[in-house]
Amino acid sequence: MFKSVSARSLFVLSLTAIGALIAGCGDDSSPTGGGGGTTRPHFKTVSINGNSFSPSSLTIAVGDTVRWTNFDNVTHSVTSDAGTELDSPNMGNAAIYQHIFMSAGSFPYHCKFHVGMDGTVTVN
Ligand SMILES: [Cu+2]
Image (tube, rainbow, N blue to C red; front, side):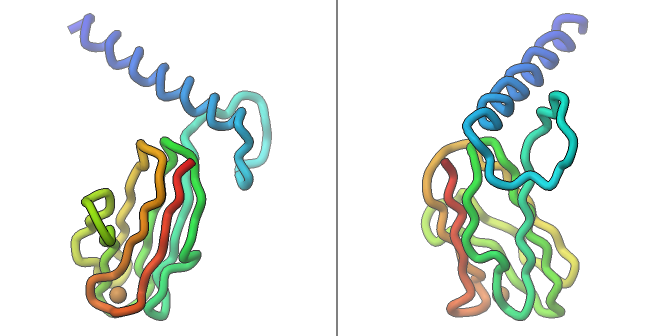
């Protein structure tokens, strides 16, 4: 038991280290004021509104979380164009889907219900 607890702390510690590395590489926007060693993972939000993703393109760092929230009264999805990186369930009004991007790359996605409703997450 003690063993598993310490393994877990190690894991958290390494995530924190990664976060610190990323922050060191120059993160554009963090509305989190203050300083002094805040190393929590970065979080970006995308609104689904009027049958579009806003912002439709987003650049983040490896390890960042993106959260999509559906403000429409119709069902949407967040679905990778190829592959399975993004694969939300059907999202009704107020539904939230979030995903942590653990590898770099370009991740174009779309809503499977609405043609032309799409976006891209670029992970550096
Ligand atoms: Cu849609």
